[in-house]
Amino acid sequence: MARSTRSSTLETRGARLKLPIAKKPLFVKIGPGVGLGYRRNRTAGTWVARIANGSGANWTKAIGNADDFDDADGTAILDYWQAQEKARTIGRGERGAPSAKLLIVKEALGAYQADLGTRGGDIHNVARVRGHLSQPMLDRVVALLTSRELRRWRDSLAKSLAPASVNRTTTALKAALNLAAEHDQRISNRRAWETGLAIIPDAQQSRNVILADNVVRQVVAAAYQQSEEFGLLVEVDAVTGARPSQLARLEVQDLQANRSDPRLMIPCSRKGRGRKSVTHRPVPISAALAKRLAVSASGRPAIAPLLMKPSGEPWRKSDHYRLFARAVVAAGQDTAEVTIYALRHSSIVRQLLANVPVRVVAVNHDTSVAMIERTYSRYIGDHSDALARAALLDTTEPTADRVVPLHANR
Image 1: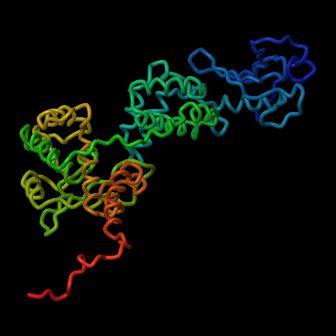
Image 2 (image 1 turned 90 degrees about the horizontal axis):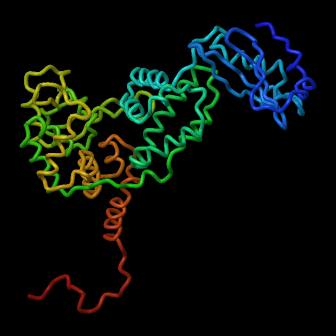
Image 3 (image 1 turned 45 degrees about the vertical axis):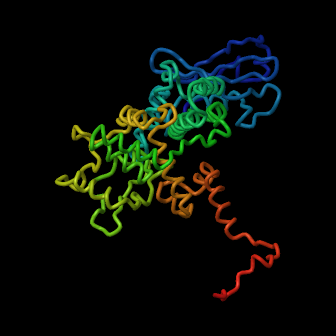
């Protein structure tokens, strides 16, 4: 344990209360790169830790109130010796060894991306966050982030993004900051992002575009006009309702075409926490689509991508954007409304209206029953109303002319 540093000016409450009220703390050096400061207030003073950042500068952080009027409790109210120990703890890394400079937001995002990669998560979540952070915010020390600046950033996103997109972006940043805090005990400001990056309520209101079957066929036909490879991608999406990221990970071995009931083993999405126990789910496809996929994949290894671009390269997450927009225009639809996700939404609604149980629809589309019910409740309501109406009891007495004899006279 490091030797405590004496200070006749700060170690007793009587000496501290003789100091003038001031905004600037009075500091004493208590270790290499670590200082303890005291700011005299009109009420109880504040203890402040000052830590060297390893680049010739310092950062400061309030660590508690001084025991000027109340007895120290070792947590919120600290005496001089307790404050000194807490400042040393903050200034050191785990196991008491001197730490490197504190993590900045950019480095926290990098660590989170590596963690996602290890756990099989979607690293594009990190790219989404980086694209919306300014350089000063990327260079901000995580331990110094405040709820006010994070709330300003969140609100700025809402000017150009839908509420649901804002929530997805802020959730990814919170996950990165939480991971950083878990590995560095000096980061003690979790409340800053819990408050500043609070989700926007009621953001999950359904604004999904549902296409009629004839429109879906027109979009698929327009995709085939651009290339056979792009046509296959769009048709598989329209038939299975899978996400583009799932289609990009399909392999030749995932096609089960030599069956009376052909199907695709669709890879599970990388949404959610941790690794999923089920990595692929069987989704039925038509015999005609299975034959086209088998011809396209002929001669390729089992682990090769099933869906390929005309160049022979696998489809990446965003490769379809411009091509799909052209297909939408060719089908007479608005590109501002219809994206490739409209095929997924249409597939879900098509199955709901065809009396497929909600649980089966959820499994086929790699989502939850709760999400189906929340997002497509209108269509579930229409469907359940039609089913219930067919079973309604008619309590009116039948009239004579409505009675049909069992054996009509001929």
